[in-house]
Image (cartoon, rainbow, N blue to C red; front, side):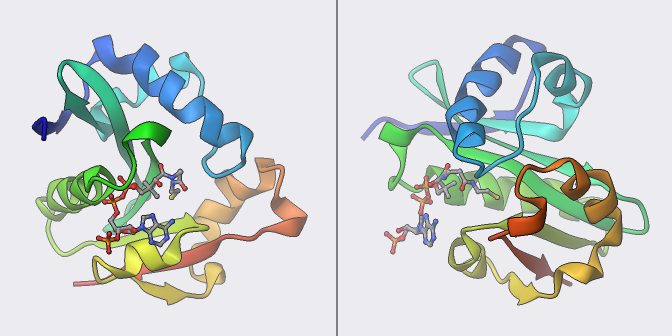
Length: 153
Ligand SMILES: CC(C)(COP(=O)(O)OP(=O)(O)OC[C@H]1O[C@@H](n2cnc3c(N)ncnc32)[C@H](O)[C@@H]1OP(=O)(O)O)[C@@H](O)C(=O)NCCC(=O)NCCS
C-alpha cells in the first residue's frame, strides 16, 4: 500500500483543500470554505498526501482560553477506509496539544469516529462561541443533526 504522508498545509495546497471540501460541503457535512478563507487560515490546516496528491485535510480553530475546534476534516471519497482520517485527527490533536493543557471539540455527524480518539459526546451549549460564529450562518441551524464531542486532558 502507498505511504500516506500527513503534514502541515502550505499555500500551494489551497486549491486541493477547496476541492476536497466542496462535495462534503454540498452534503452539509462540513462548512463551505472559500479559497480566500482557506488561505487566510492555511497555517491551521494539515493535509494527507499520497503519491504527491492531496487526499485529505483537517483544520483547527483557536477560540482562546485553551479551547480549540477540529474542523474541515475530509478524506476524498475513494480514499476513505484506509486510516487517513484517523491519521489526520491524531496529527491535529498532537499539534494542538503542543500548546499545553487544551480542550478540543468538534461538531460532527460522525461522533462515533471521534469517540475512537477519546472524545466524549457533550452538550452543544458548552460552546456558545462556536454557535454564535458559525452555527448562526449554517443552513442546518434549525434542523441540526450534529453532535458536539470534546477531548479533555
Ligand atoms: C469521517 C472521515 C473523515 C473518515 O475518514 P477515513 O479515512 O475513512 O477514516 P479511517 O479510515 O481512519 O477510519 C477509521 C475507523 O473509523 C471508522 N469510521 C470512519 N468513518 C466513520 C464514521 N462516520 N462514523 C463512525 N465510524 C467511522 C472506520 O470504519 C474505521 O473503522 P475500522 O478501523 O474498524 O475499520 C471521512 O469519511 C470523511 O471525510 N467524511 C465526510 C466528511 C465528514 O463527515 N467530516 C467530519 C466532519 S467533523
